[in-house]
Length: 157
Image (cartoon, rainbow, N blue to C red; front, side, top):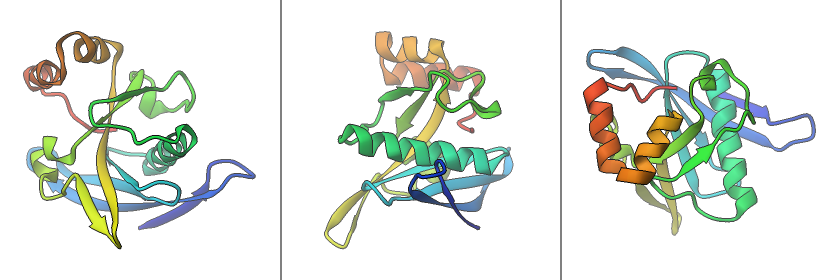
């Protein structure tokens, strides 16, 4: 499914593709990713529901990256700060950007792809809590991933 919309009344269009991925023990999940219009980044999310809300979040992330003029790196977090109020982000205080290879189901996707002599970066977008951010900053990503393994954290939006 192809979804095209605007961030606001006078805003630029954004395009998000919606498809499906079968994940063992979870079933069929919604997979959404933006078609980059302002940057060279493809932001990808796995969603349980409300793909229109997830599409808007992905478009806002691309817009944020364009506005800051710098590439969002793997492991970086971006605070939500109530900017995009949503049922999906009520428990999360931020988004973290990860290489797709952190998910066994997404490993076939490369982190970077050369398209028409331009490098396109794929980043998995995962909502995180204040505690996740604290662990990431104080102890690093490997400790955070270990904690997620212990509690079987879903990387879904």
